[in-house]
Amino acid sequence: MALRLSLAAALLGTFVTSLAAESPGPALVVNGSITVGTLYASSGQFAGASMAEFAGLQAWVRIENSRGGVLVGSLRKRIPLKLLAYDDHSSVTQASVLYRKLLSNNTVRLLVSDFGTVLTAPAVTVAKEHQILLFDQTGTASEFFGGSNPYIVLCDLTASQVWPIPLAHFLIAAKLRRTAVVYDLNGFDATQDQTIVSTLTKAGDAPIANVSVPTTTTAYGPTIERLAALKPDAIVELGYQLNDQAFLPAIRLSPIHPRVVFTANPGQLGNELLAADGPAALNGTYTYALPPTVAYQPVNAGMLEGQFESIFESNGHVSINFLNLAGYNTGVIIQSALASATSTSELGIREALNSDSGNLHTLLGTWRINSAGAQVAILPPVARISGSTATHLSAHVVYPLPVQTAGSF
Image (cartoon, rainbow, N blue to C red; front, top):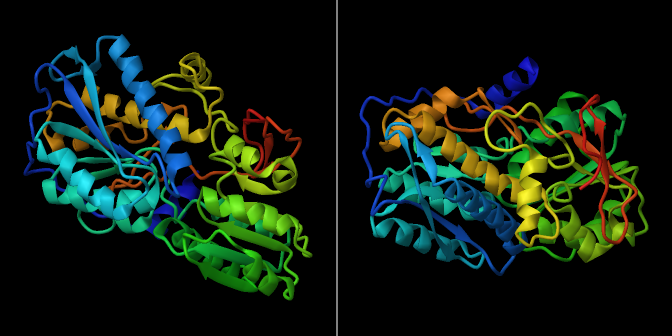
């Protein structure tokens, strides 16, 4: 763990945040409630992931309101929550407008970003301009955490630049000398690519191909044809859900059969990709192992994964995935900060988060941030997908071992 955190710090860098001059922001409680503002995407490239994450955040609001609201330690009472959410339809331009709209009425005090790096990027800018603390759910690009910006904390994933450290070491340990990497041109995927290339190169196994494609890519035939002549031992494809959804059947039907095919999103949206591509496209491939595939215990903040799953599915959801858990976990980070903060100012809440860092153990693992607000504690293991059926995707951790796993999701 010490080595992992050392690597994370080296990759991300840190800065010293001064909390001396606090920005009060809007009142925390307005008309007897606390308003949480967020965006979601009901359509477009990020809809599947966004709606899954949004469902988890909605569940957190329901759970806390069933208890009388979220506990605010400095007020010594529970305050009901309201959720104000707008649909950005996966548009960065629209998201930028809507984040400003959320803050324009001066009642949103808890700002939560939409899914992923692309739709979080405009929120980082808007939150800093308004001096409102942004609870960044899954926007993991390292560029969000450079410079002296105290108005951001990453809730549910490790910053993407350190994500693939276990993956790169898995490729090295498996003696896969001929690795090809295909990545989308966005902060989430490009930073992963940089780490993989750097780590493999230092080990003497520089990738035989490093190909960038637009984030909108849904046809991988030409790229796979280029790689076929190189005869790779491993192909790593770094994209979002629709990218993986297009890549997996294309590589399966291609004339090349690398020993390892890795994609990032089955670990987050396994059943969704299974429904789109079928078990034949996913079985035998590799992905990041994230909850519920990996079970983290003990938990001292929020519910155990099984407890939340029971409540979540009782509200009409057929199954649960990582992004449902991530949306709920965002709420857990918020409620922990509000419970422990001695001040309800923006930077007072941030100071509480700094104190909570390393002490919160949630259903997503240990929550620890560096001084820039980037999560650095959890590095996702590598899992192999096998034994999946038409309705159930199964994955097992293969590196590093031992890791406690739930076995399937």
